[in-house]
Amino acid sequence: MTQFLDCRLWPVGGELAKTFAVYQTPPPAQDPGDPLRALKKYVQGQHVLIATHGFNVNRANGIADLSNWETILQPPQSSAFVGLLWPGDSVWLHGLDYPGEARVADDAGLLLAKFLDANLQGAASVSLASHSLGARVMLSAIKNTSTRISRLVLMAAAIDDNCLNAEFQAAAAKVGAISVLASKKDTVLADLFPLGNFFAGLLDQGHPWHHTALGRSGPASPTPVNFRAPFQLPDGWGFLHSSYLQIADPPPPPAQFPLPTDVPGSSASIPANELDATGAPILGWTAEFSSAFASSRLR
Picture 1 (cartoon, one colour):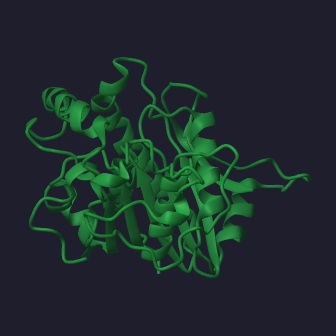
Picture 2 (picture 1 turned 30 degrees about the horizontal axis):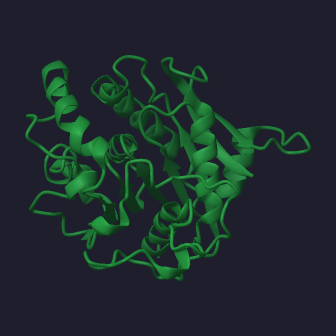
């Protein structure tokens, strides 16, 4: 069962809620009583990882993606996983929705910061992981929280490549260690991010449209002293924007990647044990890698 913090008002679209709903999926067989009290007990003395999805993801898909990712994580002992759901699915312009969603992401991050300070003080440590525009949610939370964040893992981050030394420089400095996964084969970030970033600059925040995405080319120099390289995935692996939380049907067995797992050299091929009998990549292997990478960087 996966624990969730949910700041959505509606299953699809809708505005940001004023508080988090706390629940687990699937629901427990017996009434757990006060869900918030149960969550505090769940994280007490544990190394907590809170992970979130990106933009254009509704509640059902967010639950499915994060629940699947939890099952293939290999966290350290005494760990607790919590999924974070936020309304990152605007209905206008779809691929270009994140300029407006950036404001929602910032507000969701502020809400998370307040929740951390009020409810997770009993945790042994708190780490954060994100996909796509979820990077802004987590960086906003770090900016506004007094809770120490041990590790931050940003996958396919749909945010400016200089965010760690500009907009969120102060937030980045508060983290124990920062890791990034980036892919130059990410067509969403390659094609839509610069154009969407242009509109973001006109409407509210963001930088001029020539900035690339953190999740495509990695962080701009100078990188923070707490940034851990390497980060650039091999082109031959073909990581797309949806690869990091990809769900296989049926799901593959967990722990295909032995720990520690790190980003290999640029010429690396897809690991042989992630190929089927025909030599084709096993569906969902990319999520297995991202989970093993995150599991390694949490240590």
